[in-house]
Length: 428
Image 1 (cartoon, rainbow, N blue to C red):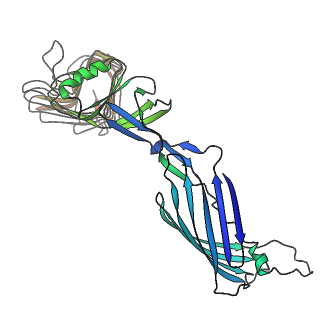
Image 2: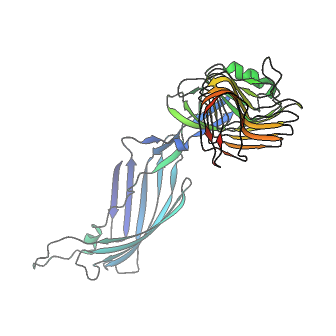
Image 3: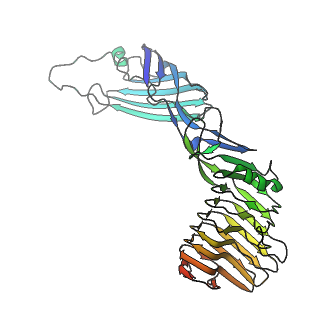
């Protein structure tokens, strides 16, 4: 920052003015100040920024006549103001007042020493009212020879007053640019925002299908009466709440937090089968992140929230899955058909049934299934189990899971590896 100032001093009056011009890098991007608005089908992003302001301040001072004009102690009162501006930033301007009590020739110190007490108050809209207190002790370094030194007159002492100016850079933080629409992830895949305020539950399946493969669908709001099956596309990510890396139209890569979303309803059965009813049918390389799903299928129908059938590289992350079945078996997640490289992490899975069997996870043919840090609650059925295994499941792994039970069920097949729980249970 370059500062240019002028001052004029007399025995009784002071006048000072300073101008401030920031140089070099005068603004910094600050993502913590950025805002994101999810409205309708648009994601609007405003970049947070801190900007240095240019401006000036000025003051006029008066010697309060409590002491003689040439006395070694003086009280001075000052009144002034300041103004700092920058394009699109809030102007910082307001009045400032201060008092300064000065003592020359401090006891036990030599000539030229000075002790000062100060109090200052200022007010502007962006920062509000601010008050400051200060004290200064000046001790001169000089030659202590025997030759006498001339004493400074009162006016000469005034010429040794310190220069008064802002030593910091006045800045403002906020969003100073126009909002930009986010349309792609950091790796270039398209983003589709789907809001329950503008998209009905009956249109949700078609909207997800239309978004296409390798896209990210951000769900916003509460979708009720989801009584059909949502077929996730290959490479597609379905997001509720979570962190998403995106690219702005200006080319910056930033991380935004997506809103929450909940879906509830009966779901629908898989193609070619009558059961179980479910809402999400996952595809190869697809992800379900931060979504709340509640499924309570028709009476006498088996129910699950998510089905992973013969597709690879699926992730179910940080979601809340609740399923209820009447007079039939209930699952939270089904993995079957030799699905490979499935990751199920950080979810809360709650299942209940008034029938014979209830499970949080069903693994009926899988390879490299990772099941970790999930919270399970299974209840209501005659036989309640955390996990059901059947067919062949190879390379099972995962830890940090918790559950309200300590049993799993093995229907048959060969299972290798294990999934552990914090209560000491190991499955299978």
